[in-house]
Length: 512
Image 1 (spheres, rainbow, N blue to C red):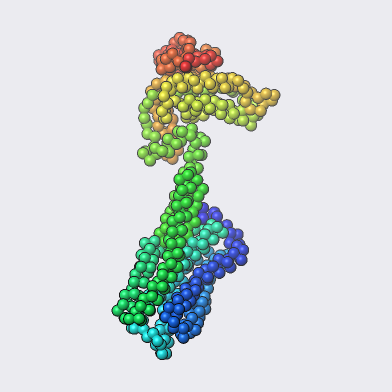
Image 2: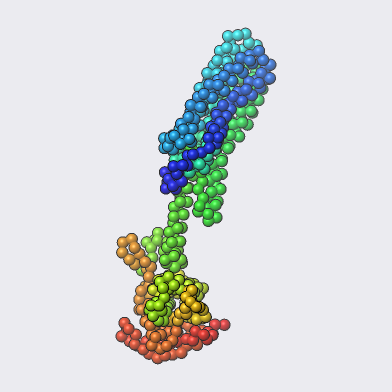
């Protein structure tokens, strides 16, 4: 039983209206004894064709007694364990086998009763004078063909009903069948054999048993009865075989459309039912995977999460080297600001600020790798491709400064709080991959380019600037922006001086 099945079957889930239980039970008994109507139609058709009405009362009466009376009692006993489950007096595990076997057990009872009825009718007919004496070959054929037909008819009628019963259990108890004893192939073979071969067998026997007017009479009778049998059987065979496939097809279409809340009821006891159960488990797995991806995407940039999940089957994001532009941001004087704000005010203002910073980065093709306290670490062209990544990072930085500088954040009285953002940008070779220990991994970028971007963000304090970029970023941008060279400076962690450039965030870049 799946976890979803366990959750849905609460202790009070079985408190179903007794009228609903009585209705579903009555429907089964109606289907199980519907062979009475078939037998009545067969009898009346035979008497109408042969004009042998003298035996009609006895034969019709015996049919009502056997198919309506005895069969009703046997069917009631078969359904009793299912009724107890529906009323909450038994578990699904205790009842599941009876539910699965309901069509075959009901059909078996009907076949035995049909055989006894055919023998009774033939014996009593031969004990009394009859204008239509029957040959031994015809007698043997009828003793085989009619019980087989009634078995097949009842099996598919009750199989069709089983779909309604399983749907009823699914809706009221949230349980799906997990025990499958039949196969779709065997059902199809039986259906084709009975519909096609059985009528031909009776006609062939007639051809070798009778001649003259009697032969014509027997063939007409058999053809009419065969047409009736085929029409009725084909209807229920088609419903019981095709409806589970149709239900599964509809559910698959919904999943293909992106609906992962679908759960199809299992409405057959064969391999199509088993396939439906597997489909439900597959959708549940997809739903869990989507929940993991969505949750993952809240802590890691959504595009990074999607890339990791997509490539994890190939060994995850192993170390790889590529060209990228790195962008670091930080809030000037954040420690001082945090001292006089209440924790909830600080967190609310910071979240609002980070949302504002995040938008331009995504808009220009970058991704946020990590939130670092009051700042963040973003990358362009790793792990997702970004054409013109250096210029894209600079444009994102300009848009960040414009967005942050034009507003306040949070609900700090009287007008919220203003944040001043410092940004450092560097372009060069980086190493990207999943790092960590055991089951805890994180995607990150490493290398001198990353370290330099972080140091440039810090150097804004020394130069009184808002955006500093490395020489490699300046060269990669070409003439797209107006940069101001600030000379060479020593950067912590590097032995050589680096040339840095600033850019006016309130000026216009030279993008056409």
